[in-house]
Image (tube, rainbow, N blue to C red; front, side, top):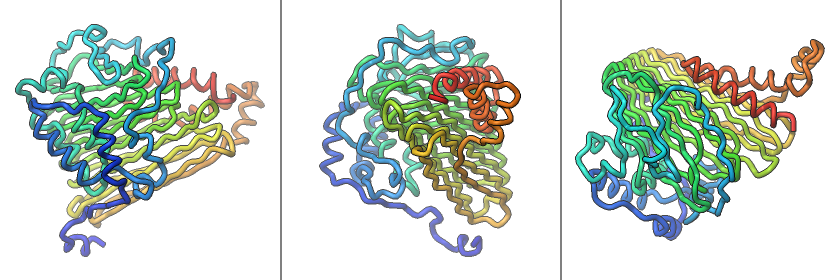
Amino acid sequence: MADTAVKAKDQTPTIEGARHPANVLDARLAALSLPQGGFSAAARRDALARLQDMGLPGPRDEYWRYTDPRPFNAPAPAALAVPDTQETPLFDGLDKLTLVFVDGVFDEAASDDLALEGVEIATLAQADAAESWAADLYGVLEAAGQKPVKRPFATLNTAAAHDGLLIRVTATPAKPVHVIHRRASDSADAVWHHVIRVEEGAELTLLETGMSGARSNGVIEVDLAPGARFHHVASKRAADAKVGIGHIFARVAARAQFKSFTLSVNGTTMRNEAVIDIAGDDAVAHIAAAVLGDGGKAPFHQDDTVFITHGAERCESRQVFKKVLKNGATGVFQGKILVKPGAQKTDGYQISQALLLDERSQFLAKPELEIYADDVKCSHGSTTGAIDEEALFYLRSRGVPRERAIVFLVLSFLADALAEVEDEGIRDCIYERLDLWLTLNAVQ
């Protein structure tokens, strides 16, 4: 395989699918107010041209075969009432810099001062009118991540996002940055775009919680210089019929480390896409998720789609995805590892597993490996199963109530994904919230 690959002109051929006709895209764009001018103007024009060329995904698109794109293609989201009470944000007890977005727009009054030693922070809406280091990065990683798989909603985001964060890290700050998303309108179509640059030897922890808009489309572009470290922990809690799509594009230089963990709870149609380019020798990229889906109150569909490219030597990647589904919920995982020619000593690992708490729920998995180097260690696996009745009997025989025993078994199932969160304090916060949710919902 390796000899054939070296002779090939292009190891990442474009993958096309059946797209919707132009009038669907025209209607989608007409409903948006596209930003004009600023340092991002050229990137936005390029994104718009690329979007016109690729179109929106249709039902026969290969990478949308398990997820209906119509909620994202619609010109406007379905109205969604704003809850009367807001849930206490995860990580509320941690010392951190808090930045609040309401329906995709930065809320200065609700946020902390942007000053943090070792970090430069600006908002896209404010900085776009002036010169910014982000001019060399905005939309760049998103554009590079369009091959071999088209990701039109990320391109739409680059063209349409009015706000977001521009974060440049020059040292290691004393505390993490916490982005809180909130909803205020029952019809908001929230579009936000973050650009993050972590300089050589620096480190950043980015926390994200909450949901914004009746529909949301988010993009994070992360550029890691040699030896940089980036930790991303997101909690996407949707207590209603939420529709949302999120993207993270990362470029990982030599000896740099990228780690991302997402906790997803409920929502109607949710999709998370990650495109990671391991571009330098001895780099590391880990991405993990724990998903809890209950289709009892509303249909639940959650899709994780990951594409990791190994383009350098002695690099490591891990994909660890665990999904707990009940009451007819659907979970999707599409994960790929691409090892380019010359990326020797690659260590690529991928596991996707689902725990089904009833017979009506389903898990759809599409793991892929594409390898053009001959000295690699790559593996993938996918399993689907129910609660282990022997383990449940063992716990009950020792006096653990059935409800609590199920919570213990589910937490044990999710443990491998949560282990990808390095910070013990952050990990403890997630365990506590998971325990609470499962106690209230796992056996209903």
